Every structure is written in C-alpha cells, then in structure tokens.
Length: 498
Image (cartoon, rainbow, N blue to C red; front, side):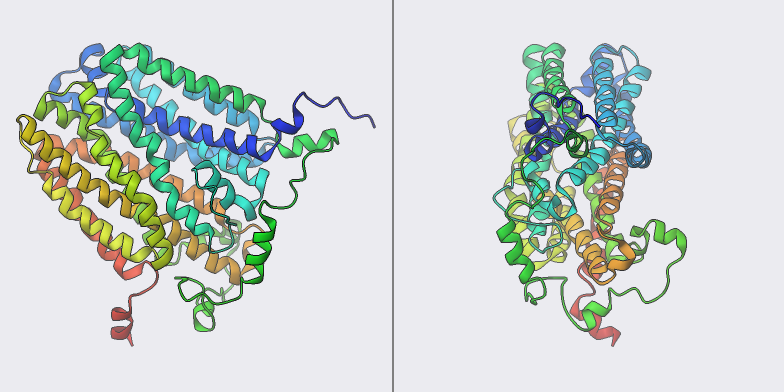
C-alpha cells in the first residue's frame, strides 16, 4: 500500500514544541481578547449604542456574564465532540472562526443584541480552546507529561515535572498569576489604545493576534496524522527530561514530610474505594472524587476566585467613571494596582502552597480579601487624593488575589491523585485529570457569569460600598470552609471529633 507524500515541514508542524506553542497562543488569545474590551465596554454602550447612563452598569454586567454563561454551556458539548472526532484540528479552527466573528461584531455592532451575540460567540470559542486545546495537549505529550506542557505554556519551563509526581504542583501552583497577564493586563492596553487611537487601534491588535493564532492552528499536524506518513520524525516517545523523570520515579514510594497529601497506612486507606460504584459513576469516574468534600470546597474556591475577578472587571471601569470622571485610558490604567501585586505575589504564593499545602493560602487569602473589599467603600468622588486611596486599596485586593490563585487546582489535583494512585483499576490508565480540568473550567466560568450579574445588580441597588461588603461576606464563608476542609480536617477539629 502506497503512502501519500508527506506535507511540507511535517517534522516541525507535528513537533511537540510547535503544538504546545499553538495551544498556548490560543489560550492567550482567548484571555487577551476577553480583557481587551473590558475598560471600553461602558463607552461602547454609551457612545455607539446610546444606552442611558443609569443602565450602563447593568448592560456591562450582562455582556460580561453572556461570555461566561456561554462558556459554561458550551464546555460539555465541546468535550463530547472532541472525543468523537478523529482529529482535533477542525473543531480547534472552528472555535477561532467563532472568535473572529465575535470580534467583528464587537467592532462594528450598533445594537445591544449584536453585542450580546458577539459575547456569546466569544464564550463558545473559549469553551472550544480550553477543552479541545487540553485534549490536543494530552494527545501530543501524554498524560504523564502534561505538567511539562502546562509549565511551558505559562512560562515555567525551568521546572522539571510530570503529572503524576508531586513536582507537577509547582507548575500548577505558579501558573495562575501568569495566566492572568492576558485577562487582567489586557484591560490596561485596551484603555490606552482606545483613548490614544480609538476603536480601530483596539481591534487592530485583536485582528493581528487572531491572524497569528489562525496560521498556527491551520499549520499544526497532529501526532496521529503525522504517523501515517511513516516519516522519520523526532524521537518523542520518551518524555522530556527522562533522566530526571526516572530519578523521580525511583523516589515515588519514599515518604515526603512536606507533602500535604501522600502518606502511608491509614492515610492511603482513606483513598481506597471499598464499595462497588454504580455503572453511571464508572462512566464518569470524577463523580466519585466529587463525593469528597475537599474537592467540592476546592471547586468553591475556584468559583469564588472567578467571581472576584469578574466583579472587578464589571465595576472598576464604571466606578472610575462615576467617582473620578475617568476616560477609557485612565479606567484601564486603574487595573494596574490590582494586576501588579497579583503578578508579583502569585509565584511567591504558589511556592508557599507547594511547601505548606493549599489550606493556609486559601484561608488567609480570602480572610485578607474580606478586609480589602470592605475598605473599597472608603474612596469618594474627588481628585488625586481619592484616586491614590482607591489605587492603594486595589493593590491590597491584588495581594489577596495572588494568595487565592493556586489553592483550588492544587487541592483538586491532590485529591484526584490520591484516588487515582490507590484505585488505578477503577480510573484506568490516564486517571480522572481531563475530567477534573473540564469541571474546573466549568466552575470557573460559572463564577465569571455570577460575578458581573451580582456586582451590577448590587451596585445599582445598594451602592458600590455595600456591594463589596456582600462579596466580602462570601469570601469569609469560603475562608471558613477552606479552614475546615482543604487539606483535610485541621488538627483542632480532629481532636474534638475523637
């Protein structure tokens, strides 16, 4: 049987580095375009759509929520479609087509309906890039090297990790701050471009990024497709840093005093599945993991983190305009005090999570946010002094965001690893990790949906200060639950339960 001629640059286009880079650009594009229009949405609504000033907050919140809601609803179908198709590239490309259509509609739309459809298409595209992108990564590098891929995408290639070893949590605990460069840094750039050069400059950046993304997605050749041409490809069957991986493998069974999860004897028996789960649970093994309150609270932490981020996205531009008369440039720059502590403190907090476990960071981070959010009621309408006060308090909130950025995914991975290592016959060869990340994505998107709706409604009805007090109360509840459940019951409660 003859083999068809191999495509040009087959070795490069099917290489791990190119495919990982393509997925990384796709994820960055999604986050960047989400954040790029955050500071200019209120001005689009007022100047182009002629929305009354009293309704701008409500419509801004609705448009932000439309994106997240569409992402929540689209994630399961995107995952099912990806699993049933023989190749990932086509749906990956179609997701970008949806994002391009959304960008054009946001650029040219003159009605609320068009803007809502655009945000929904953005949400659909986000679901595609996060579910199919992760599936493409798994196909390319294998589950045992997924940590390396994630670390490379988010700029942490200096760590040598594998997904089933403790060192993977170094990557997982460090990437949230850099993950947020696109989401929180883009509003600053969007505000600057809008003020200095208008709508055209903002969307020119978007189109340029989409062009790069499209070329890379179009050029990739999946591993299973490349193998059909029977060409001598690079040796990628062995994982990167294989010597290090083998050294770590030999130490897998050695106890680690600093490891918040791995233990022996009684600890390991807690992860053993003793009863026979029903067939519907066997089809979706992550459901059994969700019976553990640690995993439920870990998802609640992710939900609350997303709610906080989207609350700031929805209210900072409108509050800046209301208190200080800011234009899009200044409103965008007002995100800087929030972003900088997040980016600087995120890696530090991640290292502490890796060393001490997720509980301290989550408990203290959400407790800190309670105080920081309440302080946001202090700034009043005024000049430079009040602006400085707002920026200082925003920076305090950025510190809290840095602390809560990593506990959720790290704790969730701890729990799933505990079940997987002790029940491999139940979970199969690759474990429940892909299902875990899909659920985490849905929960995070649900938080992105609630945040703008809650913030917009409360700000209009009880004012900005009281709105933040309500969100602070939610953070307090999450802080308490984190103390009780993350990492297992604290020693104090274990003593009382004896």
